Structures are given as C-alpha cells and as structure tokens.
Length: 278
Image 1 (cartoon, rainbow, N blue to C red):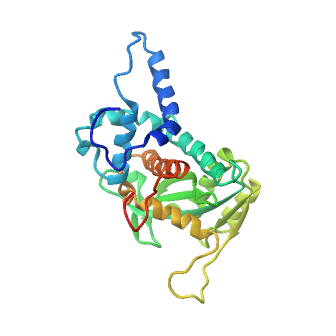
Image 2: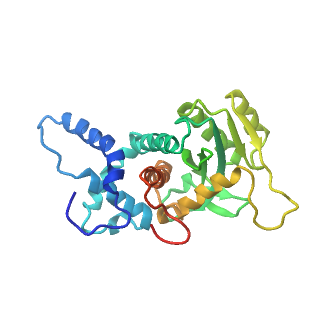
Image 3: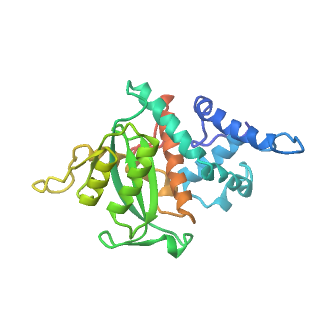
C-alpha cells in the first residue's frame, strides 16, 4: 500500500483480508492473459480505496485526490461492476456477517422496498422517469435485504417504473441468487400482481400496511429493517442523488456502500451512524 495519510474511508487491513483475495485473483487472471507477462502496475487496494472515497464523499471522478491513482485508471476498474465482482463480494460478505451473529449463511426471509431518487445531469433521459406519487424525476431503487438489513439484491430502474414491476425484477434476481428465500415482507405499494408472481417462485409475500390510527412516524413490523438500510445508503453521499450514467453503475454504488457496511460488521469496526462519522 502506498505510504500516504489515510482517509476515514480507507479499507483496514482486517477488511482487506476479506475482500483482497477476490480482487487480487481478478487482477492476476488479467495478467495471465497478457502475452508480455508484465507485472501488475496498479495497486488494487489503492483502487478500492479510491472507489470507497468517491462512494463516501460523493465527489466527481475527475476531482479524485491526487494521492490516489489517476481517476481514469480507477474508472477502468468499472470492469469489477461489469463482471459482477462487487455483487459477488456483497454475497460473500453477507454470508459471513450472518454467520458471525449465529444465522444460517443463506437467508430464508427478505424485506423489499423501493426508493425514488433525483438524478443529476449525467444520466441519459432514456434511463430516467417521473415517480408521479412522489413527484420525483429520476430513478427508482428496488432494494432487498435480509432480516438483519444486509443487502441481498439491488435493482435500479427509471422512477416511472411501478413498484410492482421493479419488485418483480428484484424477486426474480433474489430467487436466482438466494433460492433459500421463501418469505418476504413488503409495503402496500406492492399489489396482487407482485404477490402472485412471488407465489410462482415459492415465496410467500406479506403486505405490511402502516397503522392508519397512528399519526406521524412509527415503526412498521419488518419493514423498518429495509428502511434502516436505505438510511445507511444515504450516509454515502454518492447515493444521495443518482449521478451515474448507467443504471448498472448505480447498482454497483449500492453494492460498494454495503460491502463497506458488511465488512465493518464482520471485523467489529465502527459503521456509519446518523450521530457521527466512522
């Protein structure tokens, strides 16, 4: 690792021990395909630190600090997004975090919610839409968590896509990645079409409505877990608004935030809270 002053977003040695082998194996596989046999020129740990810095601070890539690798080189590692490395790391870390608290590595239940967020000027118009209910022009995140709030699936679509359609996409991916899931809780925005589709996948979808007799904020059974996860995501400034050109990059930014969160849980390091920094 390059000798420089550390940032709060930098990955610790303990957390690097969790994710480093996967990233180094990916790099070595790339090197093995080179006919020249040249050694690695880039420290992938510093690349990951740069990505975590962008994710946490919300800065644009070209404003990346000069003591990181050049932003053009860091952005080259979008291949981690395209080859599913971020998604796989999230799966692996979720399993480890569950085992740490005495749970089965494979979840049997999930909680699903959607979140509409405004977009910047970067995303193409074709990838955006208007959420008429929330009066937001942007994109919609469909997030699936386990009962601990750990991320299982993240899908990003135009905000005009209904909760049913977004939820069905998330369900399909959930069942592929976690076939063990047989139960899910959702809010009243998910209709019969979603519930019936869940049933065809062998998943019992239960709608948990708000208590109409209680005014203002109140904790809703099961749903509070995924809502807390959405709150965790908002602590990563890159996710406060959708700045990504491609929806796949938006999904990757969600995975990166939760990789940060899950790895800190496993190593007993401090996680973001609303009452202070790391």
